[in-house]
Length: 219
Image (cartoon, rainbow, N blue to C red):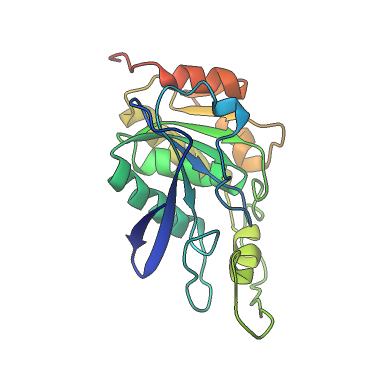
């Protein structure tokens, strides 16, 4: 396990399976989850290293005091991992799928494709802000996943036009022709909006992994 810093948070980056030479694949888990002990079966054919990042307040990463979780903070977690890895293809599950999308738009050069798959926290909150809710965890020691993270990220506002702005930036600046792959059955509003954008492909998970494992061709 590799320890990384994101502001005051200590992040846990796990290398899964045997070390290989080749492109890195970074797994981003769902809401309330943590990095799995071993790579998912679908990733067995990946030609390079496989890593998993525990988001702030999850798994072996530290828990900040008082909550304040947003998807943009978790995007910063991914940025810290990319700074360590250099570049990676992102495979996001649930909440991790949305974070993978944001990271692909914010860091289109080091992100060699973002794969969006089903899992907890994929839908998030509504497209518009609702009534503020202040969660109050039970007294005592807090262990991962942080209750603040579960409540705040489950209500995360995800407007479709905000999501598509990240797709457009990824498409314009990425070396890949199709930097975003959608491999989900669940289709919240923000995700359906992505399907209308150039640079987004809808495919099976195995096909997406094969696509991003190939060397990038000049556009």
